[in-house]
Each structure stands twice: as C-alpha cells, then as structure tokens.
Image 1: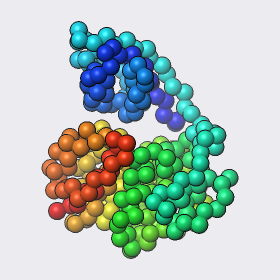
Image 2: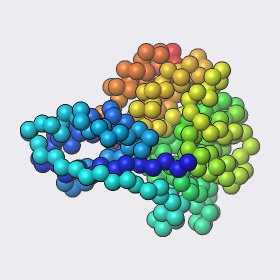
Image 3: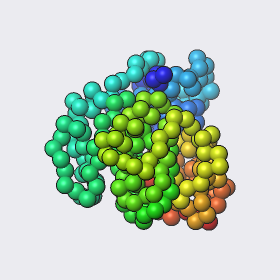
Image 4: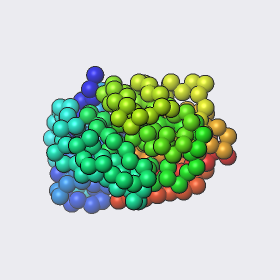
Length: 278
C-alpha cells in the first residue's frame, strides 16, 4: 500500500522564532518533512501516524505571542518517477559518483549509478543522500558487510557494492521501494545485495560492519538501540535524515549504546554523522 500523507499549511506572524519552535514541536509528534514558506511552513505526517487531536498539545499554537493559522490537506501519492523525469538532471558528487536516469547519456566517473526511482526516495538530489554518498566515499568498504536501512531506491547499497562491500542487505518498509530497489539492482548488475521489505524487526541475529540509516529523526531515535545491537564491535553507523539542530537529541540517544561521533558532514543545515561503536 502506498503511503498517504497529511499536510498542514501554516501562516505565522511574526515568523521567528515561532517557525523554529513549531518545527521542533511537530517533529516530536511524528511529522517527518517540513517546507519553509515565505509566510510560514508546510508540515507533512504519514496518515497512519495522524489523529484528529494531534495539534491540541502544540504549545506555540496556543501562545498569545504569535498569530498562527493553518489548513489541513490530504496529499495523494505522487508518481515520483514522472516528476523526476520532468525535472531531473544527472548528479555529480565530488567528481567521483554520478547518479543518472536511463534517459541520460552515460557518465564516465569512477562510480556511475543508474537509478529510476518510481515512487521511491533516494536520487541523490536531496542533501541527506548526497551526504551519505560523501561518507561512503571516505570508508574502506572492501569485503565488508553492510546494511542500507530505509534504502529507498537502493542507491547507497549499490554504491557500497561498487566500492567492494561483500554482503549487503537493503531494507525498506515501503513495497514500492522494495520493488524499485530490485529493479535498480538489475540496472546496475549488482550481485551482492539482498533486498527485504520490512523494518528494524528484521535485524534479529544480524550483524554488520557498516550500517547506513538515512531516515527521519523519530524513526532513528526509535531504532537506534536495534542498529547498535546489529553493529559489529568497532563498526560504523552512518546516520542522516535530520537537521543540524537535532544533533544533541540524536547523540544523547546514541551515547547510551557506546556510539561515539567520529565525523559530521553538513549541507544546507542537513547533517550526516559517522558514529563508531566503542
């Protein structure tokens, strides 16, 4: 089943600091994506996580300091493939990785990935995917075991195989992502990647040298304990899908499982963190 989202369009006066406070409060309630607008904010939450009373406890909406109006909208599933084909240009990351569509000319960089996303996330355009690619380019992946959690198009899993990873699992809860990942593995002639439809519960008795999790902040916080348990001693955990301001809450949770920050990359306020398991 394709995920349906609920959008709330907020107009805010005065804009700051109310918008930042509102983003923080909504993030704690399960809203996954935020688009800042000229006069406010649009926030998105999966319909499965939404309830009619969800905004009742949002403090800033009841504050006399700000005037905040909003309207609710149900967002129909988008054919990301059609949208992508209308707007997509090939991506060049650090003059080393190209990510292109079947209708683009062949690139000649060191790693050339062919992706057709359909309903999936992970083309390389988004800052978080870009950051994860940069992290992976810094690692020695030869003969390593890797997990790509929330794999989307499987673009990151594909890059790890190209960089020498020996066994790779790619997992996504969305059936469209599962099917699309399988298609993209064929397009890139991948041999070492297995794709699974599901969530972190699939990781029972699994161990990896490297775990990649490019997911939203709340899911990361929910599943960090599972990732840590599935990580080999001295293993590497790559996390993205959140803003720079979210680092303290992510790191507080990660530190409970002997995970230590080793490197932070930043792009337009989005961050990608490399953790080491001590």
